[in-house]
Length: 401
Image 1 (tube, rainbow, N blue to C red):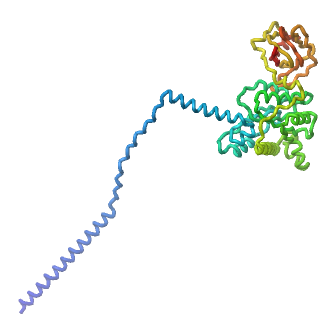
Image 2: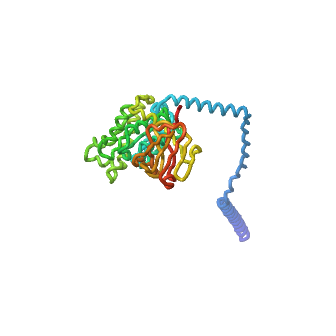
């Protein structure tokens, strides 16, 4: 009895032990599996394998042009440019803007123009008329604080042909009191048209006198005779009312302030716009008020170091030049009277009292005679070596005989 009971207990213990072993194996397997999973999670992620960079293809060599082909291309480009220039040459300043061609603007005058900024004008014209073509409006402000009409007539006569200005904006009056304004202003118009045949002109009436002076009225009359449009800044400012009139000037109340310059640009833009809209053509030649005006445009400068000029002694010079008509000397001082004399073809030309026109660089343009005539001999003599040393040159008209 006891032996059978013992066998039953032994079998039961074996079963329990087997179950425990199975559980131990299961738990161990679970622990191992969990550890494996955790190791996988913690393992670093390998970087993606980069594909080797593709070797760029060698550029296709451009075809080499022969010298003949290059020459043909250059000739074609030159022909195209020439055709474009020929087309543009048909147009006035206003018509060039209308048709998208670039333009060159020249500013001449005294301090009113010299101190002004015309960038608003060029920017407006370029934006309104040339944005599609990409052409430019170039402005050359050659005005000078001491500028005057006679000096600029002589300066324009000597200007190079390029750039071939399409428009000249003029503003004078401050330094022309006592001079022959009618003749000098008309001479400037003639000189501009002679030097730049297709150049249009706009005149601005100086506002700094706060009135229309005799000189300003003379310029207005010349403009009327030659169909030159006028912007009268004095009238424009005055018509806006006495309360705001001086707002257009700086603290001196004679020179333009920023508001005045802005208004000038605005008036120029409006006037030019009207003429573009009307497709205004080139200026017509008009009858001259003074016969001397055309002659003045023929004056040419002969500097003292020109081969045609010889210094004969301490006080005298001789000149090998056939001249006829208006004549001037350029001197560092305003000389006249007994201090200087000219003998041309045995005729004595005496100078009056000093009456030279001062140039922007401080020299003086001094008249010799309105009707100088020289076919053979020309000498000029000063009263001292110091005065002779101050001679800088001559303005003369070459005789056509």
